[in-house]
Amino acid sequence: MLNLILFGPPGSGKGTQAIKIAEAYDLIHISTGDLFRYEMGNNTPLGLKAKEFISQGALVPDEITIGMLANKLDHHLDANGFILDGFPRTIPQAEALDELFASRGWSIDLLLALEVSEDEIVSRILKRGETSGRSDDQDESIIRNRIREYEAKTAPLFAFYQEKGKASTLNGIGSIEVIFEGLCDLIEQHQS
Ligand code: AMP
Image (cartoon, rainbow, N blue to C red; front, side, top):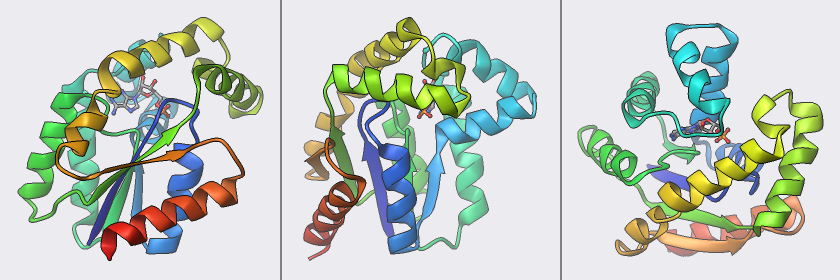
């Protein structure tokens, strides 16, 4: 198996790159943001609960998010591997992920972090908001809140994986293709 985490602030290009990596390495792409948007679009109880947090730019509580991820993993027990995009976002989520994977006989191979400055992120997200239909992409104060959540709760996860020798970083500014090649190089270095 090959199990990857694509890491970085909102708007760093995780979704775009995760789709390309999933295709190149035949992995299942799981984006918790996409899963929440699907639930919200269908007005499910989980979607309605998640909306309270997402609309404010806050993280959805761990127990909701972890349960949703566990359910998704169980639909892909025969996968070649996974690329997780937007999960984990807190230390308790990372600990839960370790347990969820260990209980299935799996483990995380590598976290790939995309580095992008805050100003670049805000302008990218506002631009995406012109077409994404996402209300959390259209309001600068909500975007700044998402970045604050990232800095406070998610950024410390890099050290969590680095201590295990499982983290690599890449400059996230540049063309989609160049960044994709850089990510593939990091994956292949890790495999060799
Ligand atoms: P994203 O599409 O990854 O930018 O996620 C959009 C929003 O969904 C985030 O701002 C959070 O409110 C919520 N979300 C997505 N993934 C998680 C997660 N792992 N933990 C908590 N909230 C999440």
